[in-house]
Length: 192
Length: 139
Image 1 (spheres, rainbow over the protein chains, first blue to last red):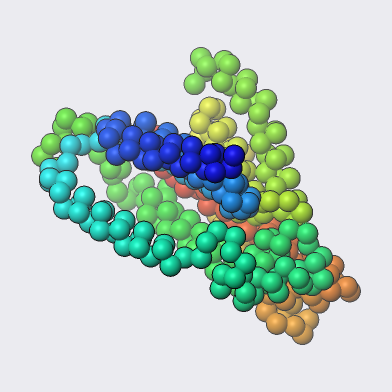
Image 2: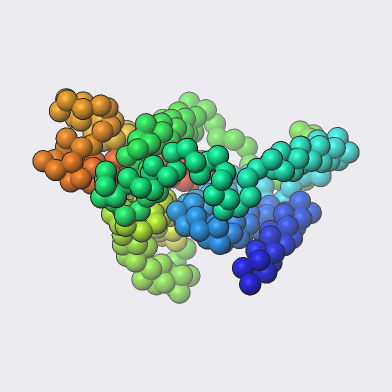
């Protein structure tokens, strides 16, 4: 039963990706991107990774879709026709995909108790989290306590991203530079 | 957006639940899935929904740029200073055990404060990005 759900979800993800590649209406592409994230979140739930699924649903399907819509309001809604032939990009994508699939052959099987990742620190965390921290959710204990440095680094990355947006586009710049021109897809031909 | 009556009413009805759910995810992360990162994103999404329906200016009257910028820096500051406090109490950086009498209590308090810092920074950054983008559009 679970395998059937897996296959259906992955097939739907493939269909979504093909639709994203074919579509030229960027608003539809953004909506499909959100759907793709939601399907990915469902797959993570099936893999028992609820925390990751939650993040994927909130960030991938939620806020990044909204930010893409806000970005589209600044640019155009229709993708321009590419000026190059798609042969070289297709070649790069196929080679990269083949390398990734070849690499995944070496990966441990799902749920394999003898996998390296299951032997090193994972048993320690699972055995000692309750004793050390008293927190029932092991994921939270690892992220916030055992791996506190990493999470501090992640927050600093988000902090830096926010500062970057303020510096590049913030309201203090509006007196200095004119806003980017709103280009119509038909007018923008000479730029392409 | 004065003419979209249904959208406005539904947004007003949903907003308290979205914000409440964000706070639930924030403070319940120890027990269920979730934590500061997800909570910050959901909180920001609630406000962005408000800004989309009622206008960015209405949303910025509640959360002006100054507060958001203080939030961006303040969250990281809370996180880092928890580590400094635990250092001053004679333990390693970001070891929360000495924050309370009992080591488990200390871990609980430390995780709570750290997740709060993460949530504040993430929510402020997400809202700042959205408000900044929309400000360009209104020019």
